[in-house]
Image (cartoon, rainbow, N blue to C red; front, top):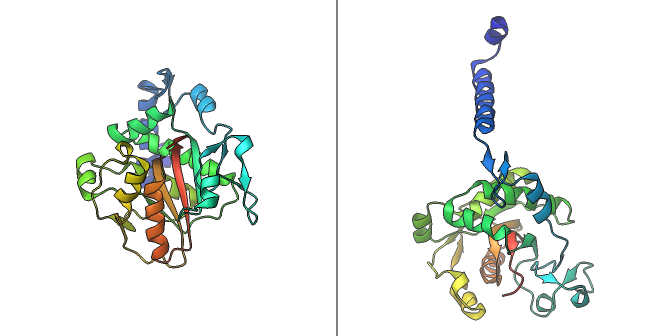
Length: 257
């Protein structure tokens, strides 16, 4: 055994010991499921993981708004379903993938990620967004970016919750992630406190593209999509800078504005 230990590079031994120690620590101090409170080695227990993700919903292919089967509409050149609003007044982005509706109990994960730095929720959202993408027919983005926070809000919060999803998602997709590709130059009021029209005005010119995006397909990541005003303004900025396509990856989608 000692001979084998000597043959292993020191870095490999250290890595192996670290992995064993981490696993032993996890077994000794098990987590509690973030939704039901039962003992779980993962963020969610097996029961909650199976019950709450990837709900069978018809969604608009453009904005991911949940749709009743009777309201489904198709574009003549697109076999996917769309809501009437996106057909009549298309947003700047091309597609949106959303895991589930913003509702209890999944909204707890979004709140924990956004305001309590539970970054494991970001990795969990990324895992399910990747699964959703793999089941779609959408092309792979060239780069993944988070919806940026203003400098003031980033300093206040200490992290960007969208980046906590974007980084592991990009890793799973095998594409680069760039948190500085777009910056937010205007500190705006919290969108959740505003009506739809005010939201649009609030972010109309809030973003600046800092990298060359000409001809690129940009994947934009956010934790929650409500009216879509922020994502529309960001996509519009990217398209004006030359981006070819913009796909949104959002963890949760509010059923109505």
